[in-house]
Each structure stands twice: as structure tokens, then as C-alpha cells.
Amino acid sequence: MKAAILCFSLTGYETGRRLMTGLQEMGWQAALDAKSKYLPESITISHQAWTEQKFREADAVIFVGACGIAVRSIAPFVKSKKTDPAVLVIDECGKFVISLLSGHLGGANELAVRAGEILEAQPVVTTATDLHGRFAVDVFSRKNGCSIFHMKAAKGVSAALLAGRQVGFYSEFPYEGELPEGLVLCDIQEESKPEIGIAVTVYRNVLPFASTVQIVPRVVTMGIGCKKDKEPQAVLETASESLKTSGIYREAISALASVDLKKEEPALLALSEKWQVPFETYSGEELRAVSGEFTPSDFVKKVTGVDNVCERSAVLASGHGHLIQNKTCGCGVTTAMAVRDWRICFE
Image 1 (cartoon, rainbow, N blue to C red):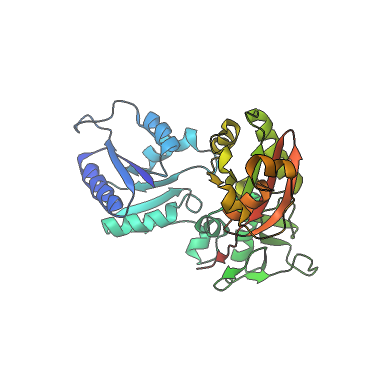
Image 2: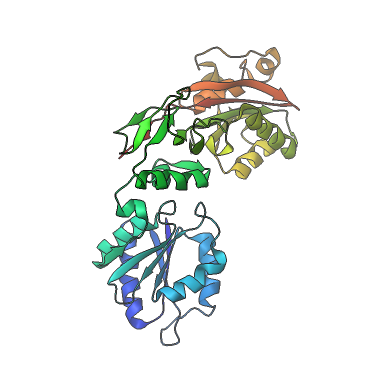
């Protein structure tokens, strides 16, 4: 995790230095910059240009100074709570740590508490669910390493819980811990369920409530094969069409997998880079050892030594999970998908 800190005075510099050291001891990559003609090595760019750069690079942007400077600095670059970094403001004396932006998904609320511990300062958190000790679906999503969709529904979940209403909870996966107060476990076919709810799923069309926020875990592996020197665009289009046909979120894909004969295949490496997921390959011997019923191909066996690449590699890369999409073919590309065993954790 990367933290970028900016101060505007000598006192602020000392506070920023203490915070930087504390964050580094916690395993963060933290760097401190100064913007003042009275401080050595002051940055030469404007504080707004600095902010634009750090918004792209850092997980947390921290201003040691007045709230007004921070607000004016970040205003042009605030886009979405899904992508904006955590933003904190700390007074130069280090008495208060304010969570200003991305309190939940960006982790600013949690970071404010940790920064408060480092500086022996008072964390200031203003989000209603935190103040009332209620379940926050966006925090739950982040801590479980999931993506979140339908943010309007997520706001509705918070509003319902704060109003003392029940919120439905449906999941394709088992969970650990106890359901938080206000959540009620629901079956997808259940008729008398709350109008608003949460669905933990990898499928776009799983919307069991009138207003559903979807929590999507990254637990699906895509086994893939293609003809030698296949065009990258054709592989991308076929893989994307496979997701569309199956209704599976791309954000659910955790890895691509294939036989080791394809480990340097340019189109597969390009897809891995495009989707920002690892590309894993296995020997024919490893794939043959995978147990299960797979779609055989004499041609594939002749070329690779194993009767099926995409299904077997998907299952193997998923930690011997189970297939959720069998082999599909198109334009010289084959795909299959498997899901690994995974469970949700309620703290």
C-alpha cells in the first residue's frame, strides 16, 4: 500500500515525518513531500498538480494542513468512490485525523484510526454507519476482496439499516461468523423477502431483491487455449463473449490458465495483461492427473498430449474447484471456467 503525504509548514513537516515513519513500520510505502518556500526540497509543482499525480499512484493521499487546502486540491480529481484513493486531513500539530474521502471502499476511515494511533491523535470519522456501529456493505466488500456493483442499491442498504429495516442477504458461497444485525438470510426463490438486499454472486443476472447490491468475489478461473499465433483481438473478443454468454462478471476472474506449450503465446499474454490477472500454465502430465469428466478432443490430445486443455486447466488453477462453464469454442479459441472453494467472512 502506498501513502503520499504533503505538508505546508515546519510543524506540519514534523507531524508528517512521524506519520510516515509509523506507516512504514506498518508495512506501507509512505513518502513525505513539502510545499513551502521555508522548507528545504519543497516541491516545485503546485499542490494541485501534486494531487493529480498522487491520485493516480497512491492508495492514500494525506494532507497535513487545513481542510480547505485539501478540498480545493482534490476537487478536480474526485471521480468515484470505487476508484478514488483514501484522503485524510491532519492538522499540522497532529491533534486530529479527518477521514475526508473514500472512507469505506478506499479505507480512509480505517486509516484515520491507525494514523490516530501513530500520532496519538483523535480520528474524525463522519460516515453514519460507523457512527451508529451498523454494517457497511462497501467495507464488507473491500475486506473480503470483492468488487461491488449497483452503488445506488448500496446506499439504500445503509439507509435501510440506519432506519432499523431488515435487509436481505443471499449468497452462492458459505460464510463464517454471524450475520450482522439487520441482515436476514434469504433464498433466491423466497417470495416474502425484503425489497432491498445484498447478493454475493459471480453472475450479473442474480438480482434476488427489488433493489440488489451485488458483491462479486474474484474466484473464477478461465481455462483457455488457442491456435498458434492467434490474433490478440480475436482471443479478447472470444473470451469476452464467453463471459457475456455465461453472465459471469469479468471482475470475478482471478486467473487465466492453459497448457505450458502456450506459456509464451502472445495473444494469451496480452489478455492476461489486459485483464490484469495472472496467466498460469501446467504440463500435460499435471493436466492429465486432474480428476473429473471433461470434453475430450482427439486433435487437442495429438497436439498437447492431453485430451482437454481449457476445462482441466480451469479446474486445476481453481485449486480443484468445479466447472461452471464447460468448453466453448469460437474462432480458434476455446474457453472454460471453474470456481474455487471460497467463503465469506463476517468479522
